[in-house]
Length: 488
Ligand SMILES: Nc1ncnc2c1ncn2[C@@H]1O[C@H](COP(=O)(O)OP(=O)(O)OP(=O)(O)O)[C@@H](O)[C@H]1O
Image (cartoon, rainbow, N blue to C red; front, side, top):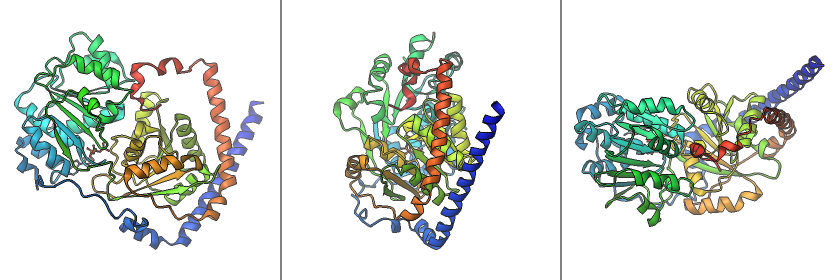
C-alpha cells in the first residue's frame, strides 16, 4: 500500500517537475524575444522604467553638515580605522547630521531613508564615548525583531573591533540561561528585543540597567506603537532618566508628540535627511494589477523574468509565506521561508541560506520588513499588499540600499486598490504599471494552479499531522517572548 502511494506521489512530482520545466522554458523564450538589450538599458537607467510621474520630489532638508571623511568628525583613531576597514569612505548624510550633536551629548531623533546607514549613525557616537568611559551595561539598543537585533550586534562588533568592545544579543526564542550567563559577563552593549529584555530585568539576578548611559530605539515608530507600548513603558520606568542619553531612529517616524514623550527625550535634536515617508531614488517601484485567481501565476511569471536575481517575496500571513516558498521549490526555484511559525534556528538558517546566495528567493512575512541589510537583494515583490503604508516603505527598502539600485513590484488585486492608493498618497507619487505580456502569463496558469494544488494538499496533510501530535502553538502565541515576531 505504502509503495503504491509512493509511486503515485513520485509520478505526480515528475508531472509537476516537467511542468516546471515547461514554465521556465516558455518564460525564458519570452524573455529572449523581448530582447536582453531593453532590460540592460533599464538596469543602467532605472528611471526609464517609470512613467516619469515621480520626477518631482520634495527637496531634502539642508545639507550643510557634509563631512568628506570620518577624520573630520573628531572620533577616536580606533573608530576611524574600523570605518576604513569597513570601506566606509565618508559619512552618509544621516551620519553627517547625527554624529556631531550626538558627540556633544544631545538626545537625537534620526530620520533617514532605508539603507542610509542609520545603524552606524547611532553606533559610532556611542562607541566613541564608551572609549573614554568604559563601563558594563553602557548602552542598550532596542529593536523590534530578533534578526535585526543580531544584525545591529554585528555592526557594533565590527565598528568596535579595535576597541575590545563586549556586546550581547538578548532576544526571544533563545535560551534564557545562556543569555543570563552572557549578561553576567558584563557586556558594554546590550542589543535586545523588548519582551526578552524585560524578562531578564525581572528574573535575572544581578542584572539591572541602573547605570545605563545610552538607550537607542531602532525602528522607533514600531517600538512606540500599541503592540510594544506596554512592555516598553515598563522598561522605561525601570531604567534611569537622569544621565541617560536617548536616540530614536527610523525611516518612518511618528510625529505624535505623546508617543515621543513616552521615550522621555530631553531637548532632542531632530536629524532628518528625508522629510516625509521617502524611498530612495535608486529604487524603481512598479505595480501589476492582477485579475482574480491569478496571483500565483503572476508571481511565478515574475520569478521567471528575474531568474537568478536575489529576490524577497513578502506575504501578509505565515501560511502564505510557507505555501509560496513550497510552490517555488516545487517549480524548481530555490526558495526559503522566513516567518514567525518557524523556530529560531529555522529562522536563522533560512536567513543564512539566503544571505549566502544558496537560495535566491526569500519568502517572508513582515518579520523581514524592517532593518535587514542584505546588500545583494535585487528585487522585492509584494505578493500581498501590506495593510500599513509604513510597512510598504520598509519592505521595498530591503533593496536599493547604500546607493545601489533595486526594484520593487507590488501585485495589486481588486481588493487592494484602496491600500495601494493610500501607499501612493504616503509616497506622494503614483506607482507606474509594469508592462506585462498577459498571454505569456495566462499560458502558465494551468501549470501553476496544478502545482499550487499539490502544495496546498501537502501542507494540509502536514498540518493535520502536527495537530494530531498536539503541537499547536496557539497557547504560546500570546506570550511576551513572541512579540518580536512582527506579525499580526
Ligand atoms: N559611511 C558609510 N559608507 C558606506 N557604507 C555604509 C556607511 N555607513 C553604513 N554603510 C552601509 O550601508 C548599509 C545600510 O546601512 P544600515 O543597515 O545601517 O541602514 P539603515 O538606514 O539602518 O536602513 P533601514 O532603515 O532599512 O534599517 C550597510 O550595509 C552598511 O554597512
